[in-house]
Length: 509
Figure 1: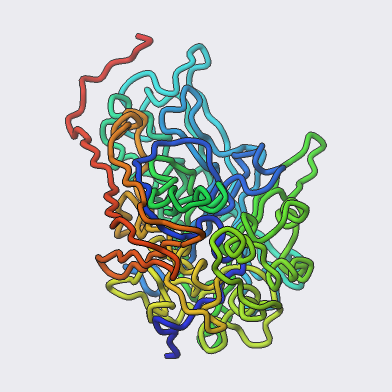
Figure 2: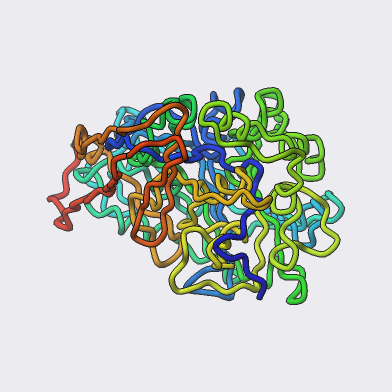
């Protein structure tokens, strides 16, 4: 198997570096939820005002515990403050959430799995989401619930040739109101994982946002002086997740052609009944930083076969120029043809299908088996089961993307990173793998906790860079840099959930 070694690079989405990029320096503080941006979290003018329709991230990977299957995950509705009641965070009922699969590399769907949702309310004479402690998904005290259907559309040449319901009226895992309302949320999550005819598994519900990165890139690339880095900006926020585990034989063209393209879209229904695409996401971070404002809404409404419209954004990316202007790290020479292969075509001998039509989506070689100990830098560190060969939850796409956009493929070796190397919550070992959502009752835990270490000795435009491998984080300095303080970042929340069920009671009698 062809392998990209440590010093190889990931042409990755020019979208590269994107959202979090990473020139790590010294400032550290434990952050609680606040307004921010991320991998297509509020990335375009129109979708930022429609959070229920906003796809934040897409993941596609060979299932680690069932390697004959592929798991697809799409997250939506970003920046959920866990205590945000009384309505909390339902899926939109006037939306079609679609998972697209291109099995032959022609930039056209062969399969489309469609999720649609319905609301159910037991008692409209209360403002409460639940009227007592919820012990199961059919608990009478769970006042507001949702169900969803899954439809499979088969396509040829861009046209639907058949469709059928894969599943109907599956239950959605509710928002995690708090330990008094949902004393055993794991039980509710488990009940929401459903087997679907044909050997599939499905899940829809709230989860911890699995994307980890420092987003202070938007404040003139980490405060202009690298003082605003090392914090997982998405720590403590939740998202809504739809996930599907499918036998791999269903979605790939053949054993000889095992590469599939994956992306997600959301369509919204107007008052007239017309459906309009309002969100699209495949590769992470693309619409966040690669596309300029004039193209963002256009990209969200577009389809992969039209991605030539955005080629210049890839070959002449803005981000390296900003890094050069502010931090004096020279931008690679344009045009950036080095960024095109993974971004639009897949990498030859890894995840590029034969006769590929250039288009932006996650590309997964389903013949590459999962590894026992995934490496966070994926293919860049010799782990071919990781990003950009699909995307696992544990892949540090920010560091990979930043190193690539700053020129790894064209000889500009660098170890750039944002000093955020893992998610704050542990992922699961079984489907749907995403971590449990933070409870509303846990929102205040950890507030005002932590210390902030200031950088010292930074002069001129000196940039403090991070090289993070294994358990070590080494702070490197540019030629102009003086001494810098060592940054030790400790993340993670410990949530004590009582397994003791309180006496059943209804607040409304």
